[in-house]
Length: 354
Ligand SMILES: *Cc1c(COP(=O)(O)O)cnc(C)c1O
Image 1 (cartoon, rainbow, N blue to C red):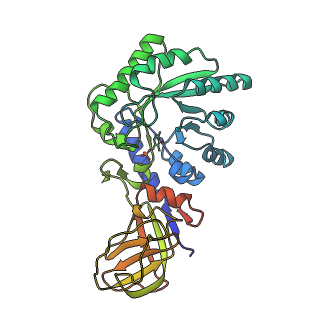
Image 2: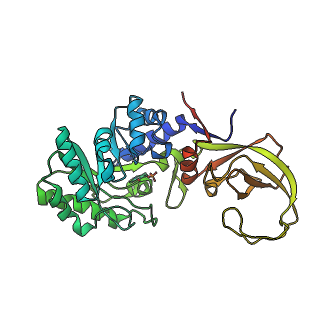
Image 3: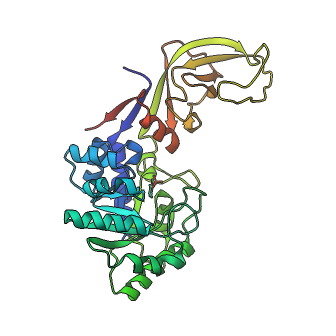
């Protein structure tokens, strides 16, 4: 075995995807799984498709490229609005992109026309989280500006919440999106196929709302992979919460004082935490560090406490028996920890599959 290692249970991920696709379809809401946290890994993509997904979403062209090379020929949605400098590859590797800038849609149209292909877009609306999206009172003008552009089809509208400020999807903001869909259709005589109401943070709203809504799609990553919803970090009933775990190996185990000695400045990361003398403690060092994972997103098993980390070392205190050298410790991960460890080339990834 090689460490540090990220274990990914594809069967549990498959269950979670299938469960959410089924539950949300009862509410007439389709699920577009978001593969970015797994860097568009083809194994994950295949399990998501097998679970019933008909489209996949990602924020990176490179991830779509990888899927295409692996022979995955599903509809691909780019959920980060395109850079002007990447328009050709957007057209080459994605079927649909999210958009908020007239200039970008114009360029998509220009190049699509040169290549004699069509490109679908979803217009993103700002609903209060203040990341991407057109202000609601500007959306009609935006549509007017782009509606006659050749080789572009407006497939729908959407919004993203809960990412920058943790703004929750609710009756009010979801209605703004829903009403805008009606207004665009009435104003321009077009029909909008996809009204995309957000990410994992929208699941709770989607499963519990009762009023009429036009929202018929969610883009979901975190809930499928971690089984929890991001706003309150609550587990979602019916989902596995242990599909991924990270295991690292102990390289030193010792009894050490809690207070350092010598003249003290800032540490290697410009930090200087205040310290308390707790006497001698049983301390273990794991071969895992900030270059591998966002340490604040790791949860240690019972009896172990993460007390510090540097580039290559994770320091644990053990309250029960001391750890021994060569022993391994397995952590659970939050979204940030999963994202960082998937992105680290130093972490070995093991996909448990059928
Ligand atoms: C990452 C992302 C998602 C998926 O978010 P989760 O919280 O993982 O469900 C959805 N939409 C957009 C625009 C994203 O960037």
